[in-house]
Amino acid sequence: MEAEMSPRHAGSRTPAFHVEGLSKSFGGTLALADVGLTIDRGEIRGLAGANGSGKSTLVKIMAGYHHADRVARLGVGGRDLPEGFSPSAIQAAGVGFVHQDLALVEQSSIEDNLAFGPRGFARGFGGRIDWRRQRARAVEALARVNLQVDPQLPVSALAPAERTLVAIARAMSQFDHAHLLVLDEPTARLPHADVDLLLERLRHVASGGTAILYITHRMNELFALTDRVTVFKDGRNVATVETGATSVEELTGLMTGEREPQREAGRFAESRLGKPVAALRGISTGRLRDVSLSVGEGEILALTGMIGSGAEDCGDVIYGLTTPLSGEIVLDGRSNASMTIASARAAGIAYLPSDRGRAGFAESSVAENVVIADFQPVTRGPMVDGDAVRRDAWSVIRDMGVVPADPERGLRALSGGNQQKVLFGKWLRVSPRLMVLNEPTYGVDVISRRELFAGIRRARDEGMAVIWITTDLEEAVAISDRVGVFFQGRLRTISKTSEVSALDLNRAATGL
Image (cartoon, rainbow, N blue to C red; front, side, top):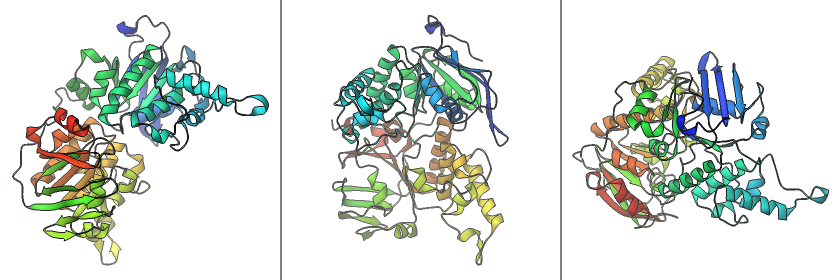
């Protein structure tokens, strides 16, 4: 159990949030074991851990979505909440939540979105909406996150970081004083330029006395923002450390249990490229403008840029999900004006989109998801061989390190990182000539990311071509042999990774 106060926050007599002796199981599987956590007023606390370590379960219990099997005490601002409290009770106590899905209505105004919560619209005579009071509320809510925009603007007109700030302002506007703000991967979909803005505004929020629980897989954000970091492993709070007194390697070691944690591999050694597998020549779509690029056997080509830059559209074009307005797709020297999913599959192209809902069947088992890409190896005449299905599923589980190792478990029941391992392994099973991955490490912890990198490295060494699409510039440098940078629909530059840095990519991605 961690200490009540850190030296840095010893002046805070009453913590913003406190829980002790919290345990929760699902169907015999222990998700949280005797967890304790104390967050001081005005503190920004990081919460780190591998996928499946218990972070999401803790947040769902805090939000009243799940109920603990056992809890000694759970309190907000010095007041204990009863067991089995409701979501409205935790909000009334002064805790706001902002999840990865911001739940904003983009075509509605900022002002309306701020009212879409338990507090609702300001009411006047006869129960009618008092628009003057509502507008004043909106201005006040935006000021709390230091966002200076017209409340009557539609959310769709805002930059990604501004939308996140609107969601934060809405969470905080439900009460006069927010004791605690819980943010779950708030920058997962933000371009790098917007991340710094969001972190600056969060410091402003904390300076007013509101505590922040910041959940992220991005180590650089933990070190840039937080005062302390709590690490979960296997449902337990294994450590709480002062951020300024630790390192990435030490945090990773706490997450993995390794005494001497491995450093994540840097950029790969340059490979000897084989013959071209696929190329785009003069491709234009609604967003892409005259894009030409190619990828060869045994090469990892990273495509990067800000969100909406066009990099992510290339995967849809190659896999036949988007039909180009002009240009051609070349596979093995043969030109096609456009592709279909069937022709892409026949040519040996696999595609893992950023939305896992499009990539797998959430209600189906791990085994079913593994074999769905190709049933032929597991069919005997007109029948599916159940033993062959299980063997192939166990092979993917073993090679990709899927946890828990259960082929009958539903895909939805796995953590995000383990879902991604299953979907990645599904495509590796059919030995594609070209694998296109769009944001493959989105929501994936540092351990699962290391395993995905290792899987890509093995496939690349065996001659597979890879297009890795990511908005994470540092990841683009770490994973690839060559990297292409998009800006406003155009491929600005394409370089050997050994000759560029993340800073170089950032300049190109922002139009400098």
